[in-house]
Image (cartoon, rainbow, N blue to C red):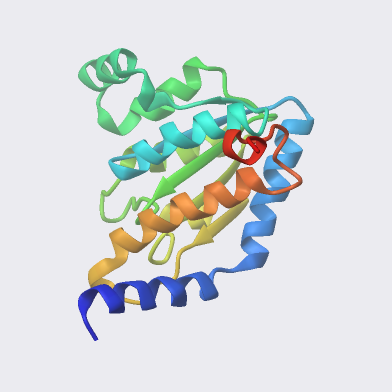
Length: 198
């Protein structure tokens, strides 16, 4: 089997292995957040930051959420990193946004962050701050989910089928999952352009 055939076979295997109950719990948290007027904050690093930006657009435009992506504001992000450090940059953004009990933090991360390994401490501290103020936390992560999966109210873990492709598969399925979420009948409020064009 070629690499290409194997990659897509693994993709099908992952799709079959997604925990539907976990996805349903994320849907429930998102619906509850919007119904009580809460805001949605998307965070991630690297590819996760790109996903956070795109998802913010979709959940605002299609899902009717008040949604934000801290990494979209490069001036504030770089000022916080420069002055306070990378590890607290997202948590301090959330603090400045007065994140509270009605709000929800949505994390995209391959490893979910690890305090023990000192990996993605910006995400660890953001999740920890969200928990401290009573905000809900959801995520789509890979491997064992790390800190995010342990602390979240609901978390989808992308199954690992090939240790050499954890990042590629996780980041691909983060996009699959969030597009499914924003298309879910309980979340979607506005028709998408191409679906509305006859």
